[in-house]
Length: 134
Picture (cartoon, rainbow, N blue to C red):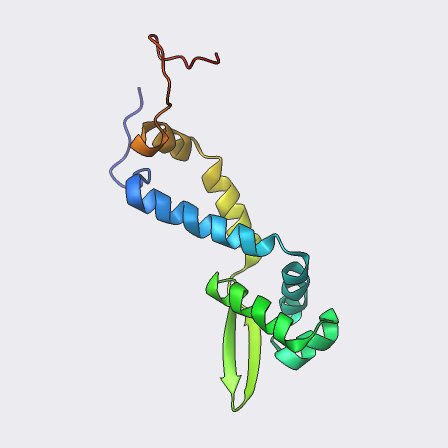
């Protein structure tokens, strides 16, 4: 069996793993709204002020501001203020974040970490390690 090198990162477990998964879930939840996706598409091009985004998406300013707040809290965009004007731009390269997230969620390390986590111990196990439904 191949020995792990000293420099290879250890699989995430426990609280660190849970925090990372919560962060991913929050970002996916934010990305699951069509209006927020539309806003992200416009912010891919360049930084934009709220009034410009309101015109582009065809919605009222309070609704657009609410969605911008959620996107900012999720870490997907950044806000810059200049006087009374608010400007938004992408904070994260969404494509790179998504690719890294998918790579992480499908890696063998993460599935092994989840299988060994006390929070994900299978319930109703019978002898032999198989669940009742197997």
